[in-house]
Length: 313
Ligand SMILES: Nc1ncnc2c1ncn2[C@@H]1O[C@H](COP(=O)(O)OP(=O)(O)O)[C@@H](O)[C@H]1O
Ligand SMILES: [Mg+2]
Image (cartoon, rainbow, N blue to C red; front, side):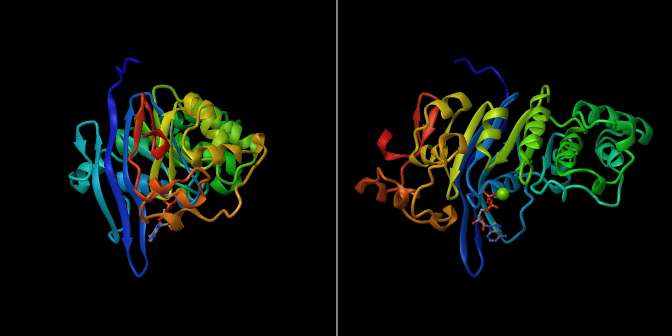
């Protein structure tokens, strides 16, 4: 397959740990490449390091986090830029919709103004012009009665509406890359569907979306990266990953999807308790585990499908 699209985001060997009273390995040696137009979903259960990964790339972690590795936006080394240079990228080139649908909005400001604000701050638009553009953006997310609801406060919105308004806000400054963290958390099925539609309607955008919702990931992504216990354990195109999952964790996770019968594994414990231990992080839960799994497996590349499991050595 010929790859012609420009690389917008490159993450090399990124690790994050917290060295407080309890040492936590939150992200371990993660590498990613996101090309223009890619829609990457990072999936994995709670505690696997997804949010910390996004925050580390955008340098939004507290100083207590120890970060190593590299992250580039185009040719810019994100970890070497000054705060000021970084501010020129965050928001206007890469926008970020954080976890927690309602929390990303200011409860004291009208929604229309909040969607308009990045256009005023980053693109130098006049308030009036930006607010009418905000109404257009809200329309593209099919929020209904956009002129009226733009004048309302976030609390009058449902969770799903706030989520879509947040995405509109995230892209309003014209960012080419959108980071979204758990955009469907707490939403009912109908609203998950509407959020997926809003994502799929984004034209010319590159998406990096963190989610624990596999169905949603499948409906909005072109590529999927699976995280388990701070590690990337598998990465492939969405079609390939769902048709031919290779890592035992991915297989177990897909088997646990409601449409596949919710076959939860016995002895299930949170993934983060395995982070930082030697060898394959999934070894204790894996029914195909062998002696070899005491050693940490590398990410094997099987023609564009990567998997961190000794079975594929
Ligand atoms: N400020 C922090 N101090 C210590 N540990 C943290 C901190 N923030 C997150 N963690 C830990 O890092 C791991 C990854 O967290 P996170 O990226 O939020 O997971 P996810 O988004 O996949 O649910 C978890 O074990 C979490 O408890
Ligand atoms: Mg998270």
